[in-house]
Length: 147
Image (tube, rainbow, N blue to C red; front, side, top):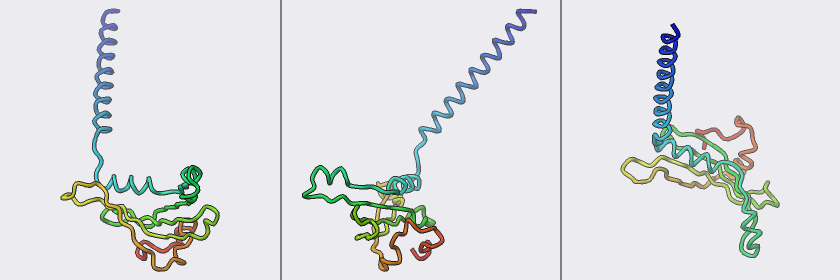
């Protein structure tokens, strides 16, 4: 009776190890799967989003560089997978007065091109309308259709 029980335990252990091995192989396959062009456009837009400062560069060479604040936040997502971002630059001393406001678009490249993501910038016509865009609640921002 003890040998039958031992045989079942061994079979159960082998089945568990086989399932674990197959699950691990499927996980590795999933993690190695390449991402699409739309995923790359989304990743580029996500990495550009937020607030960044040039403080380190300005402190190393104050005669040639200013401490500038760059702020970027999502403005719209288009049907073709493109991400539109609002982008502003300001001096760190006066962040409420941006001196450059633009719209950035991270767009998946067409298949015939060798790139993954195409970045474009667009001027904003009504600067006051977009001032402090990232600080406003989403319902008070210009809507994606207007962007």
